[in-house]
Image (tube, rainbow, N blue to C red; front, top):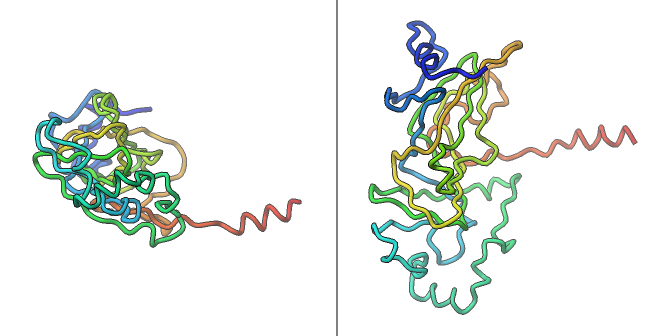
Amino acid sequence: MQLTGPEILRRMQEKENPDIIIKPFDIRCLGSNSYDLHLADTLRVYEHTIPLGMKPAIEYKGDRSKHSMRDWFNSEQAFLAFQAQPWLYDIRDPFHLVDPTNPEHHKTVNIKIPDTGLVLSPMIGYLGSTVEYTETHGLFPYIDGKSSVGRNFIMNHHTAGRGDDSFCGEWTLEIRVLFPTVVYPYMRIGQIYYEEFSGQRMPYNKNPNSHYSNQRGPTAAAVIPVDKFLAEQAGKKR
């Protein structure tokens, strides 16, 4: 059962051990059954996914007519190289592949979002984070995009919008855009919802296998394990 906005507020106002904590909180961001979350001012990009000589994002000049393809390149030489051999800058090139089991592939570069806005590229995946720090106890929290964000074809998470009972921290966002798109610090980027669940609790912040408890800022992926014991078990069944 999903909580309504008034119920979210009531649980936040419990004097001892509230189920829900949202910091900072502003009543103007409380909706009918959710709370609006905001984009923090720092993004991260996996370093080796940025084509050589290219910028992962562009500072917005306030008018799309002031921008051109040249803006994506660090130098005139890099732009001329792109014009001569554009296929070398194709993000589909396996040179840019991500190996989820290799920590070297999770090295990131930081990008500050200026107050004037930052143009994101459809070629790049960005790790962002919410301004809000949240705690959720005894409830199932999850985030999703706002309708207006979706209608601008901004995706704020890739299957990872679901949280856990007793997740505490800022939410990391996996951001992709369909077109070159401007984002701003503190823009509304999504909504958090809460649902009740049944069964014995297994709090995330007390689980030794949790990777992202108390995370702050955009957090790179933990190494994804390859559970070879499953292959051994599968072999026993044959």
